[in-house]
Length: 77
Image (cartoon, rainbow, N blue to C red; front, top):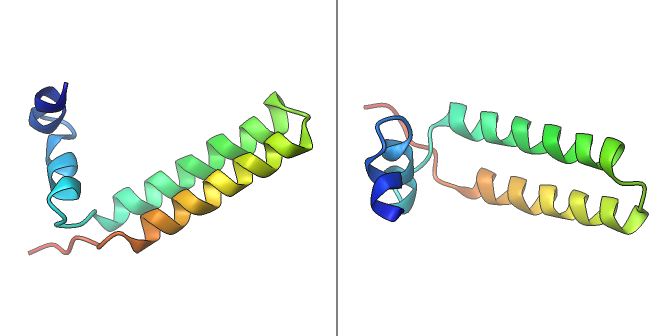
């Protein structure tokens, strides 16, 4: 599975850059954060009515956003 992921022609380069610490492109960060919050928000609104689950979803979204923002941003050369 690992070899398939890092040699995949569509997202292999992104995986290698992340794993090798070279950074993540800005558009990838923005896309990931937008998708993350969209999915978390829709889950919190449409899937669960439990307040503790909603708080947990919010906590996961915040932690993942912080992680994504702390990643090195890959510059074009």
